[in-house]
Image (tube, rainbow, N blue to C red):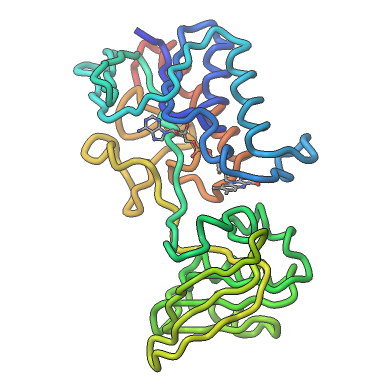
Length: 310
Ligand code: FAD
């Protein structure tokens, strides 16, 4: 069996694997797509000490760092089921989609998350070419330009407030008749001079010139009238979904499906730790996920040297 088995090969999983392997214990990583969300990222400019890099380069560097240690990487493998240990300190099982079963004394879940898409024409085509999902990451790329934010929940309204300080103008588009964000955020948004709020509107298309985004169309759901706004960027803020569906019924999840963790990364199941975007950790960022992965690995190591006693 593995001493530490990491499920997920994004920044959190890679950091967990390096920290575990450096303790000289048998470590494995099973990942559907090693690199995770960073593979889909264009520029990364906020990983402190790396002034600028791109996603695929960053993902390759993560893998290189893990491979510098004796870690078994099982890439291209999806995990489908977790079986908790039958007694304290016992073996935990995970079942892969290919039918194989792996056993470990401790587990680190770092399966990350995915942004919910609006699913309109232009979204896929212009992803990373004007269509963005992370204001902390990509906001500065739109300095002095016009952008839209789709979604009037807390994340959309926070994104619009944040972007209003950087860009020329923000149009916030909400599907419902009212914004769903907290009143204090809505008041702040309404006080900003360079923000327009469009409610009861359905985004219908993101337009571009073949290279980058140029406009967004929406339909007023009250009047049925179509409108087009010229802009350079569209931030989609309609939810980040943790990749934890397969954990329902075993590990305790929040109402948003995030894995509940304590300050050491421990979950509700003994020997099972978690890190990164799949958990309740606030602010989903690479630097936070890597720090979290290190923390969960140290938490798992502590658990192991105590023989699984709480
Ligand atoms: P992920 O990166 O999501 O990795 C999850 C891993 O788990 C993957 O290997 C995946 O294949 C695997 N996995 C999932 N389910 C299973 C399963 N059932 N079985 C096996 N493996 C599974 N952050 C920044 O700090 N700066 C940026 O500039 C930045 N730009 C971004 C741009 C885009 C387009 C996106 C989408 C995100 C961006 N982020 C950025 C956010 C950042 O990428 C994430 O916060 C970070 O990748 C989270 O790391 P993670 O390891 O928790 O999860």
